[in-house]
Picture 1 (cartoon, rainbow, N blue to C red):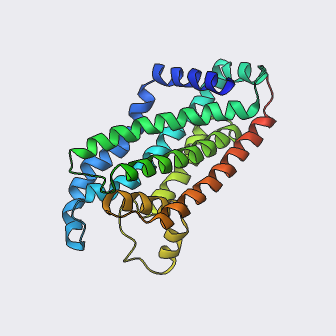
Picture 2: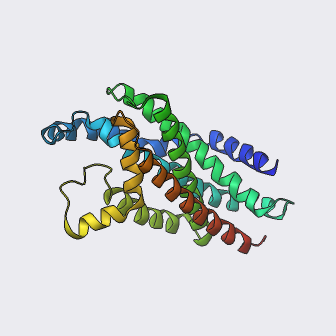
Length: 251
């Protein structure tokens, strides 16, 4: 019950500050609409017929980072108005506080992903794996958002202010996004760049999401690998956030 109460409270805050949803989805939407239209012309020469469908999985990951990162900002605002410390001294488990914060970011991520997917329909993007593929995409988005939100919440508990938080998040998000297969296929890569891209866990997440969107058949081995990988990452980020919150003391 504590988790649901905290989740409801955080969602109310989000919708009272709905501009945070608009801001975090704006950049991925520009990539979807403008960049895919411009770059898509050159991608047809290497066999990518619908570049919007190709970049959509990478932009889903980018949306997840944006939505969950704004949840970290919410943590600073809650500290500023004192509500963070009121929750901290309440008879609520620390794990419930973390889950309430994390699940709010997951809900926000799903809202933004759904909006992006609806817009992508106008660019002839279809999920070729059907209803099963949609369910698997939803599961992967859930786990991705859970991991990122736990990570961003832990980082927000480590850093003293929003400026440092935003700087660190940019330093994390940009390399992860560009050192992946979000915008280009990895076939032409070689050397150290190829190794870096393959070591990026989000490369595998994006590739599986892309296969679920573009390929008619579901490769359950690849899906299972990504799900297990994300579950492990979720456990690490949640444990870190929980550990950091236990160190917080009420003013």
